Structures are given as structure tokens and as C-alpha cells.
Length: 414
View 1 (cartoon, helix red, strand yellow):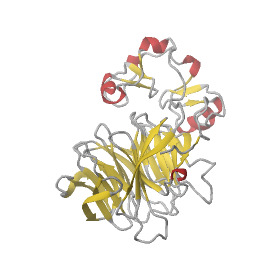
View 2: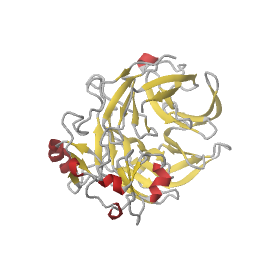
View 3: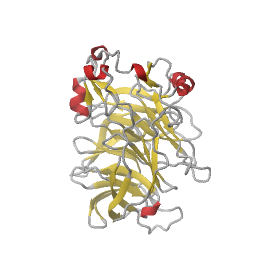
View 4: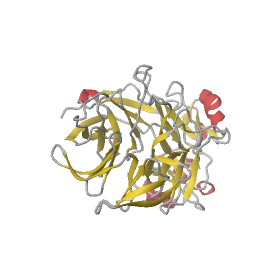
């Protein structure tokens, strides 16, 4: 099929990553790897991250002893390499788990100034529909891919959860459950974790038997609303105190657990003790541990994307592109994923778009799905073959007989 035309109006310039290229890069934050101009350093970054180490880019690579830098992800490990791909210092364990195949720089080369400071994004971004499926659901609000290529998909409006096989142009139902699902994720043992309404504990489904049980992941007294499982087996859960979501009250948290269900970290407030989230409706992570959340702001479903460093600092917030996100057509993202190159992809429901962001939440571009015939994109998931599945929902007021579409997209440039 023909490629749709990409709207390349948000491309990253070679300039400040905070003001999106309006000014020349002069400084770099060594804690969160943001490149910035002098104005943004003083007016923006130092206000939200006062204790971060910021250096003139002319000095980068001239005064760093790798062994003095402690790894953020592996306690007791000293860093030994700089990952040029991710713009971060890493230890030996990081190489094996996350950065294998990335561009790695040794201390001698780093200190000779051989680190290139340029955006990772190159080339034109393209999406192409490879397959289109008609489903038995009216809305596809959550989707997950199993190891055998089958899929789980949920329609919360009609409280349906289906396990399906993908046939030539349709889905064949294997199992159908009457339950409302808020979030879904696949574990590394290929079981399915999901969130039911009004429960503090995540549920677990064995895809082979269809048996549903309680999992070991419990955020009591909070209620979970979103879930993601990382490549190193951590479970990321968005949660809140319960009751009416808006106006916001009580706790709004992203919780990190290990594989055994032990809580490792909570993200709730910034260093000024202000809430990080209003309602963390969808969550995912980058390979270097950044937390990416679709944050629901009000009852009209206006949203933003919030990106945090592993230490909890706000790296960026994205409220939609000014060319397309207006008062009449606000930014309404519901699905989020990160690509293998750590770009963030989010759906934009009523505008029929995909927004592509950097791993720190800065805009790269937005992409028109309407021109491809894809309407009301909602849920997203990455396949085993690194294509993207998009689950769509029906237009408000459509008859109950409407069948939601599922699309598989091949992509390049991200």
C-alpha cells in the first residue's frame, strides 16, 4: 500500500531541546542528558532540578573519570563506558542488559572530545499499513500481543475482554470474558497481567488454560489504572486513591515493583513537592529507565505526556503540537509505546494522528493517520517483529453493530 504523507512540521532542529531549537546549544545536564541554551538553563532547568550538574558543552569530554561515576541502575557498579546512542554513562551490566549493539565510547575517546552532540533522529518518518483486521468489538481500548502471535484486546464500554487469533482480514475469538479492563501487559513467562475495576491487586491470566488468578502485584490502598512490564522484568503501575478522578484529589502515583511484587520506587511529587501526575492513565518506559506516562488532566479527556528520569526529575512534558492541538481539537492521547530506538509514540484520538517524541518528551513530528484511512486510533502495542498494532474505537453515536478495526503498521525513521 502507498505511504501516507508524514507531517514533518515538528522535526528536531540542531538546537536547544527545551525550547525546541530556537536557540543554540550551550550547556548539557550531566544528570538527565538534556542539551540546552543558556536561557533555558537559567529560566527552566535549574528551577526544576537545582541539584543537577550542568556543564558547558565545550568542556564535555575533557574532565570525566568514568570510574568515579556510579551506575544509576546497578548499585555498587562504577561506569566504564559512555553510550552515545542513549547519551548516558553505563556499567558492564548495562551493556549486557540494555545497550548491546549501541554505539559505546571508551573513556579515552570521550576525554578527547569524540562524543557527537546531535539528535538521534535521521531520515523521513514513514508508516505503511501491512494488514487490516475487522474485530468483534466496538472499541479496542487495550491490546497486548502473546508470544505465539495471538492477541488480547479489551472493550471497556461493553466490558469485553477477548483472546483472539489474527486471520487473513479478521480476528477469530479464542476466549471471551465479560470484564472491564483498565490496563494489560504480558509478563516474561508469557502470562497476561491486567487491571480490573475496583481491585487493588493485578489479575493474572494463563493464555493456555484461560485460568484467571490474583497476581503478586498489589498497590493497596491505591487502585491501579495502568500497567507496563519492562525488559528487565520490572512492573510499572499507574495508580490513584480512588473515587472520582476529577477534580484531582488524593494520591496520583506511578509505582515500580520487581518481579516478585516488592515495591522498588514511587513517583508522586517533584522536588518542590508538587504532584507529578493528575491521573497516570497509560505508562511505559525507555531502555534507559525513563518513565513515560499519558497523564489525563480532566473529565473532557485532555491529556499530556510526562517523561521522568529514573531519579524522578521531569525531563519533558508534551501537550500536543500547536499546529493540530487546539481548543476545538485538544490533544487526547490514550495509547503509548517506545520503539527499539527509544522514541515515544502516542495516539491522538480525535485528530487521527500519531505523535512521535524523543525519549525525553520533545516533539519530533506528528503523522496523519486519517490519510491512510485509520480513524480514532486509541491503543498501541509493539509486535514481536517490531511492527506497530493500532486498535481503534468507533465514533460516538455509532450503532452497536459497528466493528472496530485493528491495523498492523510497518514503520521507518524512528
